[in-house]
Length: 220
Image (cartoon, rainbow, N blue to C red; front, side):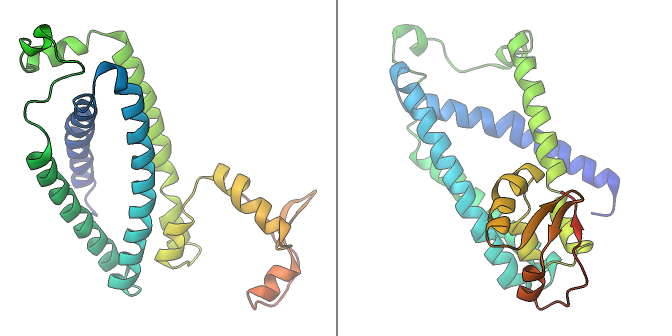
């Protein structure tokens, strides 16, 4: 969106529907699926499946961007966004019809059976807990770092001239590039470290079919 105001509105709505509504519902749903003694195992299973699903969906959406877009970044992005929206609707319907209506928090007792539903007053009381603000700050820092790191993809396509598929695949943080990609590139002889910094070798130029004009320093 070219309008900055519209971009701010979209991000605010994402915070309302995601941070305020979606994740609390996820946490509540996990708690309602087992007893108090099973909570640790349930959260562990959730995190494992969440990571696997995120990785799988990322590759699927990249494929949709490449196939539907056919070189057009905007068309590919809209297609992937439409697919994600459709999957979200289907997931919501599955939860609506499959989630047990009589489920309660943890072990069923007379106390939590008579406690009723959470009210708006309960939400307001949560703001008085210092731990809530500490966790909010930590999450905000993480999301900010992730959002800034996401600018690597448009930089790769707009400045470096990469395809949208390749840029989205390697759209990682600099730490990941140094810990994962760099050792492999050095092992196969495409990258070397010198007093001037990281340099591309003649072997890498030959692999890319580019004329070798001397080692080029890389900044990560």
